[in-house]
Image (cartoon, rainbow, N blue to C red; front, side, top):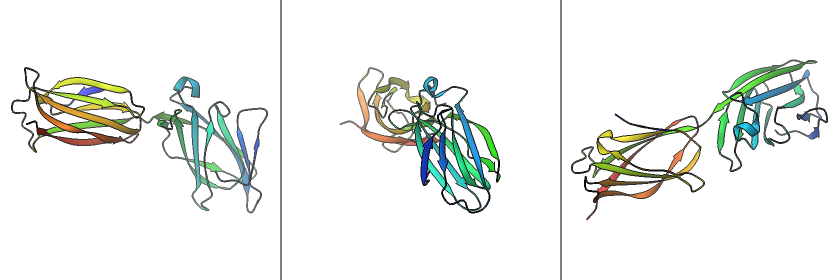
Length: 225
């Protein structure tokens, strides 16, 4: 949408009763417990959310134990189970990625507790991680449109597909795109007179969109001679 601007573990086994990953620590020093993390993507399952792989990052706050891996949606659509974790408070991050590796959904950093001799279960929700892209335009370093009536914006997504090819009134000063997938986008800008003549242009360039952030760029167009 656009709006104008005015685990690292020693041994791994698979549970046969559910789609959970069980991770066994071979060094049971201290109190140990089990943890199941269930997740959804704004209330949707993997397939319905367009998620192909799920990244789960788990970090212990006291002892620094860290697990960071990604799993196939087809095998772990509902969640993962960690066994024999050291008793601690853990920070959890869940990411849902598409087949190209772009982050579509991301949870907030959330805290979960593991207690020795118990099995704790938590349900985590990941939210759309689309980033915003804000583009401002100037002309030879000034914000004055002068004879420029419209600015043509061409925007190509990380997979090479044209996302936008439209003209906007120069007086808007820029344009905002919401919920763009994370990655490297390609941008072109042309300043056009009211009769369609090309007056200003910017060389095609790459802009980076980071998920769950407002990515702001000011593009200066030079006079065409």
